[in-house]
Length: 127
Image 1 (cartoon, rainbow, N blue to C red):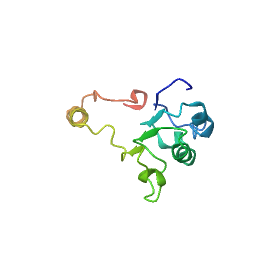
Image 2: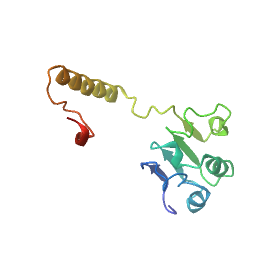
Image 3: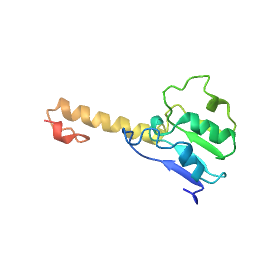
Image 4: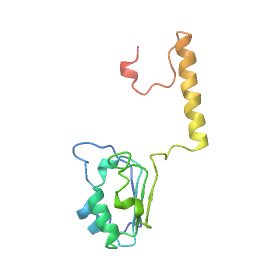
């Protein structure tokens, strides 16, 4: 953390990881560092993040996820020039959406034909 220019979070939200990125984490980071969260909003303590950004402890943040979603319109992070907040659309590229549509159509056609659906994540429960 002490040497990172950018910290990009990619983790599951669990009881152990909730608010994992807090004032103690930010204190270890360079004041020129940027925090990126595209994982889950609950991983970052937004009160601590706001303080770190306001005081210059962090240079900036990019948030594709927040806690809660949608973010309260009065949340100070929305008005900070060193923060970019997206409405959880990190996967909304044209290519990604096209691929998602093709996968859904492939599953639908297979199901209609009585065949095994090819795009199944939880195969252990699929019959």
